[in-house]
Length: 168
Image (tube, helix red, strand yellow):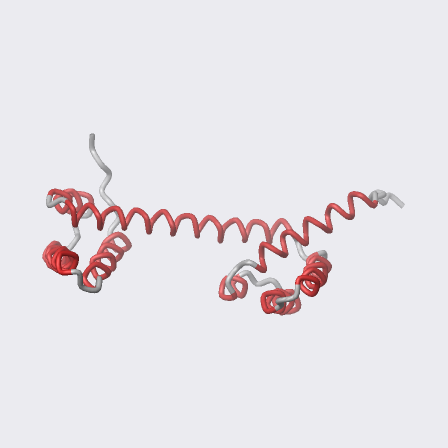
């Protein structure tokens, strides 16, 4: 019998790590949880934990989730979680980049030329119209309908066309 003796301290640390991983999973939206393919029991336990309000009930549920996770490969779950978090960071960066373009287009007329150089397939007439309407909205204090439309157009341009590398 070549079994490694695992100390009680090590088992407790592993249990706490699984519970912490379960807490990170419980913080995800339901749609992302379902995409992770965690198994029916674990998914149900995570969804139940999201609904709980009582601190003590949530603590016991997280212990149960930790127990269920012992049967799964935590490295696989951690890698899936990292992919989701990374994707989220990429989406945030993309959103900020598009907002910066929108602000530049509204503030400066030369920004449209820069955008046309970066994205040659961009439909400039629709952009000009959206910019003009957004500026007019801002000037008159109207609801930001065209402002949002400009963002939607920028989003379509960026997703449909790879940007041309900048030459300096």
